[in-house]
Length: 335
Ligand code: NDP
Image (cartoon, rainbow, N blue to C red; front, top):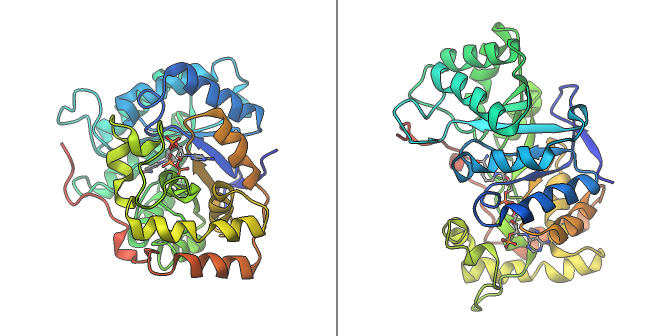
């Protein structure tokens, strides 16, 4: 079964492997497969699920809500997010204004079919709304019982610090940050992780497998396998393109003997790698098929010794991104 970790310094426990439905539910995979994936996740002991209003322009929340219907609510941890434009993308269907947060949480609860979400996250930092307005709206969402905890996503260390100070004044706390983090993308290590440790936030990290690239299934110079994200014309192909360079794919193949040496598959090694960071509360994995989850959950509880971590660094030398300036939100609010 999947192990639990505390979400930052909060009392909430979440499964260290959390299932996320970006790019899949409501878009890449049919609804039946999506629901089967959620049920497989539950069977494997995953109880934490991450979605966002913007995924498949709100359809992903509906699919997750249908898949979780009938489950004991107390046994689930449901996370969603607000910020990116949704619906008809009107001037107020976006950002972290009080209006959009209040309407956003109500829409998410309706689509998910629940009375509250466990974690409500600012999907980016909104430079066009005063931070006080955003944090007051989050405080009120918590006080209304619509979200139990508040988190952020891709906020810089300074933004987290300013947000946490205001949250403290308003009687709540930011408990988590949701950044991209993988053996290939380590930009949070220098600034975001130390600030989060100091302020009590845990990381729930996205694309731990670099969208599937660290699974090793994409070979340099070869066509991507049929049905993979790199062939998904509905959006996946465009998103994963940044990783589909021969120098990256060649370096990733150098991980194969490292994984074999420790008796793990490459997807398991990639997920286990992010879980070695003590500030990580969960790896949010994606899956387009139930079998992938069956394989991926075996990363839970794995300990990678220092020599294995060093071998991973050596294999990926030259293609690891570490620049903290790459943690950023759009400079102006999209609309
Ligand atoms: P991953 O890096 O885990 O990539 C998942 C994809 O890799 C799957 O959909 C599948 O794609 C492929 N895959 C998974 N397991 C295997 C396997 N065992 N063997 C081969 N291929 C495999 O994460 P995602 O990029 O999907 O992101 C995970 C979650 O993170 C999202 O669902 C979302 O909840 C969150 N997220 C948050 C963001 C934010 O801004 N806060 C941004 C992006 C994601 P396929 O089979 O199609 O090739």
